[in-house]
Image (cartoon, rainbow, N blue to C red):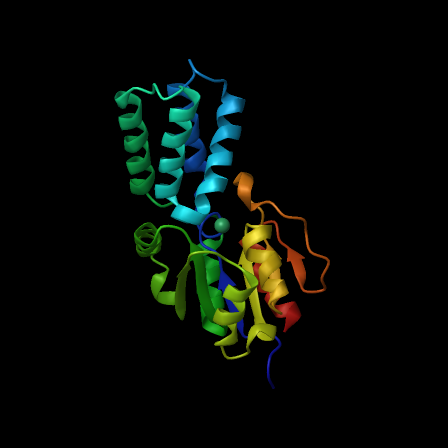
Length: 232
Ligand SMILES: [Mg+2]
């Protein structure tokens, strides 16, 4: 008997391991360094604008984030930001890249269990080297049948990746913390989308929940095995 669900795609950042909390800490340091020039709220808003403008140039990840912080620092100081501040921002970026990996609750058990029964794929965006390093640190790399580090996550991305798996897109499920990048486009491509929200979310990852019979929400990854069993 063929199962409904044959492939499970996992997002990485803030689905399998912590990510956004380290960006938020760096952003707090950024606000501290520029406190004489703008308040925290203004800095957050200007930085988000800069990140939005820069995504198309730099892609997702720490490098683009650091360049956006520098750009914002130049803007809010009217071009007078001291080199010492730029240097601190570069250091903060290096620390962000070097931060030890912390798996989220149930991530390891769930990935191990799903690897036994299903074709599993890691699908993540971000800086290539950084994502490869985090996956190596996670100790989960060998469990995945495939790892896809992509420049963006659109319906086309999921159609391409899931289309090449045993059950095609209809037999695939994407699990992640971003409604915009993980859930909505996977459903658009014809698969299932499972939203596992995290407390902290990046301002550019928000989207409305889709109205679809293939949409599910879980509190954490601990509920995934049951959901997969229900779908069959
Ligand atoms: Mg994520």
